[in-house]
Picture 1 (tube, rainbow, N blue to C red):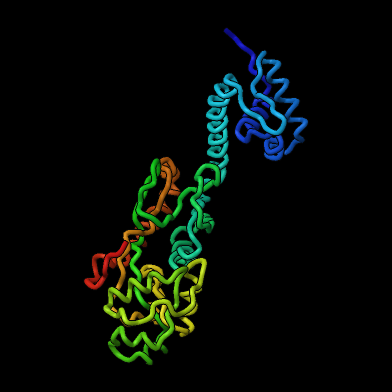
Picture 2 (cartoon, rainbow, N blue to C red; picture 1 turned 30 degrees about the vertical axis):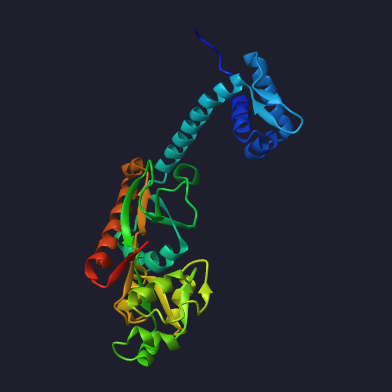
Length: 310
């Protein structure tokens, strides 16, 4: 039987209203007036011959028929959005969007970007920094780097950086501490804290220096960038991720005077929908990130002094 479909504008108005349960929010999303949304929904209900919403003084709710209709339409509109996004990306096949935290971007990624751009000049790598979890489809993200345990349902996940913390400071401060300093030498130094003070407590316990007040020193939030800059400036010692300070250590801007490291269960993972790798540019960026992470030796494999903590 050949049935005529309702108008697309009416379907869009209904889907947006049902999703928000608000004609005002639906109107903002569709860039029309609430009155226009109300009219389009009414016309759709007339076409279908039934009510889709129960209209209360200050709220909307779906009727049983409306809920059934919405459950199907929301899938149809999601598929249309995904198809539209995919066809648009074909026009720019070499644009790859990577989402990560500010700390990862500045401390690990930025020092390597020149090498990436030299190796892959035709790939337009766009980096978005955020501390929240992203919606790959909604936010237009191809790859993301997340800090956690590696379990992300429905997504591929590859471990990039082990999250071991080591104490680092400037070469000037190392000269004051002296060669092969004992952890007790930290009693007279400023402890720089990344976000909170608990990491230094765990490190001092692992180093056997429990008589040092781990609560002293400033907390520099919201990420480790401030602690990194303070350590570079010689203000004190900071606990930073080994993978994040690799370039500073190699270039002599920072020194790690102690062998103790804290081995965390958490790590940085490369996360992405499996279908994302069907685009060659995304697959290339993923391969480069994985290979770069493997160049630095894993502290879990190279340091016998790392202490596991939870």
